[in-house]
Length: 354
Image (cartoon, rainbow, N blue to C red; front, top):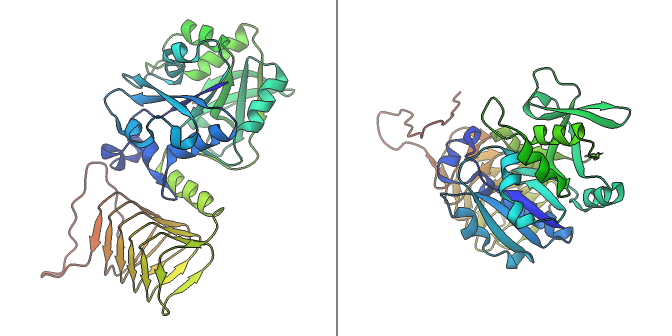
């Protein structure tokens, strides 16, 4: 079995972060999101992976290389434009050939691995195996209609969902999926919809089986989804303090502190991860926060947030919460008159003040 993982698209709902960083490289607990998908596939014993990338970028290739460090072999498949998930499958046919394969959306986070779903696919003798998850907003997803434990239809982003299940970002196929993706036409939004390919399989007598995801699963399409995924990952980590903590600081809960980082006169309340060479002074770092390398936080408070590399948070007179800070962001107290708030924000930025 092979694996196909998506790492393309533009991540428009995560701008301005994605103006300069591929969405799939945004860190969750200080590790690129895409790494979790690669590790999950490798743990299932799948070593031949195709990764779909934007044709105009080498960021993913530069980050993961040939895959040797993960025990896999990665083939990169460029996509000229985001033309739908069925288009992703279509352009991968030369890589997949006739092998069964696991199709994993690289911006999805799933606990518990994928092996059990591969085993269910093989046991079912199905042509297609889908994973379903109950969601509050099925209108955002492909939605199955179920009858007596069977999927009888699938509609992409329906205005009137037939169930409260979403087809999550993990699919397993045999080669019949290529017949489907080559037979369907673009939808009204100009994309080859994977739900249409699934409906083709249903209409033409192919067998679709499914499993329900009973653990947590996140489609990290929006900032709050990233923060929630970060929370879920941090909740499963174990403490590991490699940096230095002075006697005036208090560490509670599960906390990871990287090499070269120093904590002075501060409270760190886990679960928290702090990267390497960070400088935390006279500050409070609250639960479910990840702070990437070379960041300094002085006389400030932050919790339930993701802070990327080389940020500076100094003398902030209010608690920063539920925030996503891109690399090299500075939030500092003004030292000049008049005492005003000054902002330099990229397109699509969002800021709330009290």
